[in-house]
Length: 228
Image (tube, rainbow, N blue to C red):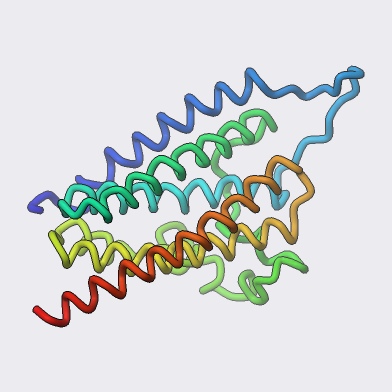
C-alpha cells in the first residue's frame, strides 16, 4: 500500500461525481416542476433543510465510497470485500439521487454556508450542532459532520493491509454509519419534501441494520487481532 492517501482518494471522488451526474440527469428527465393539472410544484429553496441535507449527505456518502474502495484494495477477505462493495454501490446511487434533486430544484451543488447548519434547526434532535465553532467548523474540519473520518484515519486506511485494514475500516464505518443515521434522522425531523423523507428513512433503516453486521464483523476480527 505505497500510494499516498491523496493519490488514492482523488479517483474515488471523481467516480462519485460522475455517477452522481449521470443519475442526476436521469432525475431531471424523469422529474417535473408541474403537477398533472399544470400547477407549479413548490420546490425546496436555498437555505432549506432539504438542500442542506442533499449537499451534506452527498459529501458524507462520498467518504464511505472512498473508504470502501480503499479496503477492497487492502484485503482479500471475501466478507469484508462484499460488504464494502454493497456500501459503495448503495451510497453512490443515493448520492446520485441527491445530486439530481439539487439540479431539479435549480440549486447549486455547493453552498457558501458552513456544512451542517440545517441540522441546528429546532426539532432536528441534534441539540447544539449549530451552537459553536466545533459544530459547523470550516471546510476541511474533521468535526464538520457526525461520524466523518479524519484525514489521518484515511491515510492510515490507505496504507493498511490485511486484518489491520479490515479492523480499521470496520471501526471507521461504524462511526460513519452512526453519523449518517443521525443526519438522516435529523432530516426526517425537519424536511417536508416526500422524496427526501423517503431517502432519509431508507438511510436510517438500512444503515441501522448494517451497524449490527459491522459490529459483529468487527468483534470477530478484533478477537483475531488480539490473538496474533
